[in-house]
Image 1 (cartoon, rainbow, N blue to C red):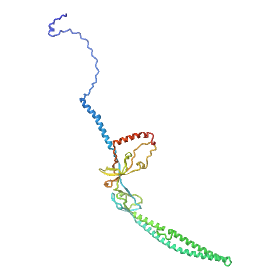
Image 2 (cartoon, rainbow, N blue to C red):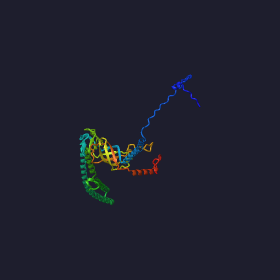
Image 3 (cartoon, helix red, strand yellow):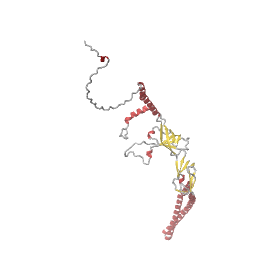
Length: 414
């Protein structure tokens, strides 16, 4: 059995008995520790799992489906209208060019004045052309007199021919008789020679009259009963009269179309104008059209007669109706001064533009429009895209894809 050591009075009171302290050990300083980087962590989200799942479904499912539906609707409803802003107003323009030369005697229009067909624009001095007309009329009367003289001469030559033929017959008989007497030694050689000379002279006179009659017949047009209108001198003189009358009429210049006169200050009173030199212009204010130049890739469903809507930059709050009137037979580059040479040098494909003419409807008010204004054109092709049609086109394109030429084959036909 163990023995219990009795408590001392200090132990009973809870006081410990002080022990003898040990001898102090030498203190060694620890090496300094390297500074540790402080890492800040974001606070964890407090959202619950149900809210996080709803946002993920909205972002990954709902929004993509909505975008796909909107894009599909936009694509199916598009492709009906062909638009271009490469379009300008066109109008008929006529250069006023005098047909005769002369000094400007009078100007009857001013800049910007509206004129109708036949309105007088200006006048060239008509005095020289009046003189020319009088001379031409004189030649015409002379031709008529010459025609009548030739007819009288032709008839007179007929009588002269008859008399000449009778004279030749008499001279021939006298020559034969004297030749017979000479052969019988009853006449002289002098008488025979004199008779021969008279016969030759009668024949020459007859031939001259016949030639004169032939010449008169040719001048009359081949026959005595030829009309005056076929007489060559009369035809020539009449043409000169008509030309002189035309020149006199052209001395007064009139408007060939209805429109607005422009560039009128280019001419002045007294200025000499040469025939064929343009002096100013008249621009039509009706029958306007639009020259549009869409891309060649936009012409797939365009044909003449399609309706079009036109807006003008100068009047953005107004619109005009029209229709496609004509499609050019070639691109604009084909009619350039220097057409492209695609077979020489390096080739870069450039989208071409095909000119269209859009006719504005006659019931539209075009009084405010001017030639050359910029416009925006929208052509309604009437084409509607459908999902079955798109799938059919996609299938056809996929089936035709193997037959398309690959890069490097150029224009090889299969």
